Image 1 (tube, rainbow, N blue to C red):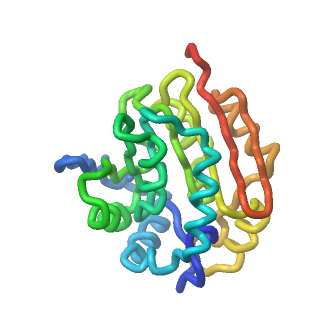
Image 2: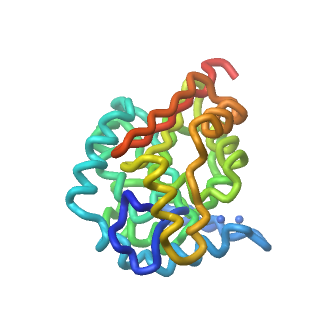
Length: 235
């Protein structure tokens, strides 16, 4: 679960699936036998109270973390596993009026909360990150904040993220805690997320490179984890 986003969550944590269009929201329904169904149900069940567990100190850490992402004015940013949208205002400040901020989450209740809070300021899609309804090269940056441990198919998800990024696009996988802290927290909680762990540095580097990313790096510190990769300028 997102240790870095919640405090004393009643059940433990958070993370992030076929299409209905409305205004600026797209909904893609679950596939039969979907292995992520239990996780989706978990986050749907806790969506309404999710923001109650975010502390002021966590917001300060998030602000400092996002400042390190290297997002530029005019960037088209996809917030993968956006949840209730905690990152959206921070991303908006970085991309400015010419940029785009798009929230994606596989839990419809999470996106519903985000839309209720922010309205038409952002774009929203309910879909699994393994099968996103976007054309290839639609975004310049994909941010996975406090969600990567919950991806049930990490290689498949990374390959799909690479697909929707433009040449030269960047993926950013981030937390406001270290890998050890994240994994220790997840092991302590109840429910389907207790086995959702961050891979080690070598494994993360291999995952990103195998998905086709270059200029891969991992920074794992006590209060900040950032893994990065770039899509080659020419595919």
